[in-house]
Image (cartoon, rainbow, N blue to C red):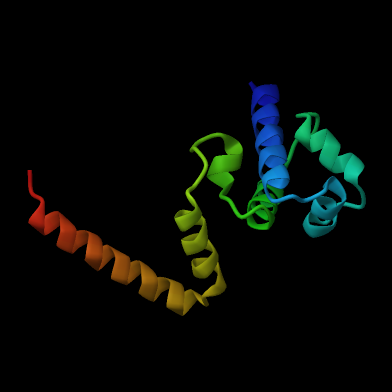
Length: 114
C-alpha cells in the first residue's frame, strides 16, 4: 500500500511539473533538494515524502496536498487562484474570508431547503 501511494504522489508531481513547464532541476531548487536526482526518484515512486515536503510540493506546483496524495481530482484553475489568494493573506484576513464564505454558504442553504 505504501508503495502505491508513493507512485501516486510521484506521478501527480510529474504531471503538475510538466503542466507548468518546469524542469526537475527547477523543482528541486524550489523545494529544497540539491539536484534533479531526488526529484526523479520521487516522481518514480522510489522516495517516501514527509508531510511537510508534500505541502511544499503542493505550494510550488500550485495545487493541494490532497490532490498530490490522490484523494481528490485536479483542482480547477479557479480553485487554484482562490487558494493562491488565500495563502497570500495574513491569518486575520484568512479568518475574515472564511467568515464571509460561511455566511454566503448559509444564505444559499436558506434558499435551497430540501
